[in-house]
Length: 47
Length: 194
View 1 (cartoon, chains in turn purple, blue):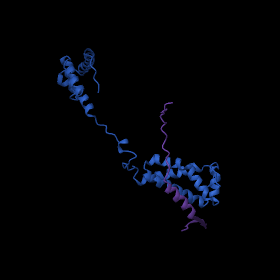
View 2 (cartoon, one colour):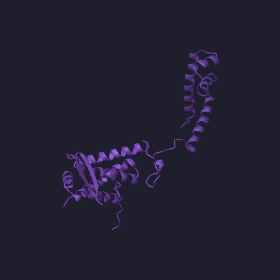
View 3 (cartoon, chains in turn purple, blue):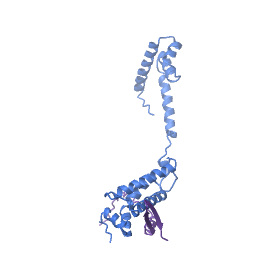
View 4 (cartoon, helix red, strand yellow):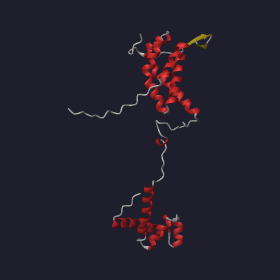
């Protein structure tokens, strides 16, 4: 049986952010603690 | 363990309660849509990545400070944040985005040159030459009025003064000139295209 060549429908570019960006966000989230004192928010980044 | 079928609202709640995995699931679930949205406005991968990152930093800060009111609209909320950051970005670049040529798109996809091509110019020139030859076939008085009106930009008042006839006569001659020109074009079966 001969090969059947079919034109693939042009898929929309599956756009994604860079893996490094996502990785940074997850690490940032792990390191961040927000403490509320008297209506003020303090952001603490753990090293 | 966060499941791909867990609704956003529950993932948000889990994240606020301390589950970092929930955040990872949320990002993975929505990253294409959000990044795609940003890229559709910005058309630059690097800047889009920056805006994506800034969007989620705001999301993370808001969720961690318990300032988020869950109304089942997590994605629209995030899209709104990214939209506002896009607007800020354009404001910073003075409303006109600076288009840098990248491999992704060429500046010519948004700018076009409206000037005639050489071929177009040749056609225009030829049409004008043909038209002048046809005008020569008109009766003298009609030709005179037509030339004064079309080629010398004279008003009918000026034409009537120069030719010594009334404005109405000048207007009549112009009307006949155009009618006869159409007949001449038909007679010669010419196609004047521009």
